[in-house]
Length: 171
Image (cartoon, rainbow, N blue to C red; front, side, top):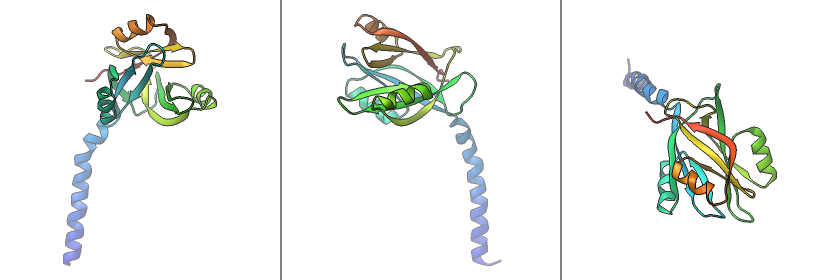
């Protein structure tokens, strides 16, 4: 056995060990942390669902309110819906979260572009799940989780929509 083949054999064993060490991490990647954020403004409020801690931290430092947090699944399945973040830059910046292919198509017709899928939210309540409600005002839509922020929306001319999903509780 040459030195080259010994090194190659060692690397292969190391790769195998790395695979076994990474399996628990890969198994836990079936869910991702998600935050519901709201920029309160009676007429031009905006909401955002983020799966990036650095984005969440930046938005909070800019005055956005954290209204809820939980997890999204990375796997489709029964009683789940894909959340897709959408953005429109003109005539002013507007954000939406689409919960169906039909909503994505309708938002695209209104000039929104997809920022991509965030993960799968629950379509029915589970124990300790975090409810996220949709409100509208004119052509604007926001998603709000916290009770205080729902009260704020209800009392500032926002109409509660039938749309609702749940984030899985953080365990």
